[in-house]
Image 1 (cartoon, one colour):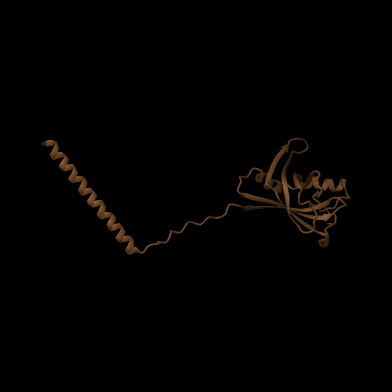
Image 2 (tube, rainbow, N blue to C red; image 1 turned 135 degrees about the vertical axis):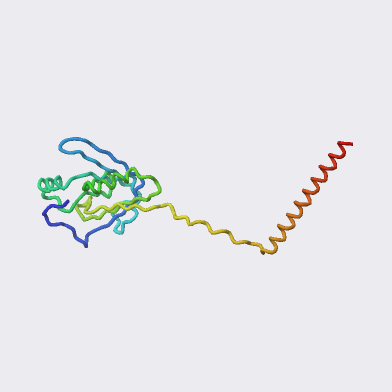
Length: 198
């Protein structure tokens, strides 16, 4: 999604932010000359910011819009002052939605993510370059998903706490008691039957 213009990235000035994003939504609009899809990551909290760009008490919205390579070329021709490798703009003040334009194959992944089931921790990382006094140019976006439910190994059988010989003696005494109880019950039954006959 870059034109023939030279890229404007300066590694020394590059910044890297990561956001934890619990809520995703998606939408689509049909029209001419093409349809448009978008995915919005809402209530995102900045969790990695080494240069103090974000407000740690602010929740951010990051909206990804689908755009084709042909559209990108036309936009570069129409707006030649826009850096060739910029895909969006990030406003650290959190005043509005931060727009990032992505190709269809990346939007496909986000589209699926927007309706995925729970149990997954999703984060978005942005690579930034300085743009002006208030905003930053976004030059790269990364989606990261991590399974949050911990793996639970099968439980090992509990070790015996008693000596096996002591445990066997206890079971033998219990069995002896049960046998004597059964004999007593049979004897009582026979005596009752004899008493009824007489």
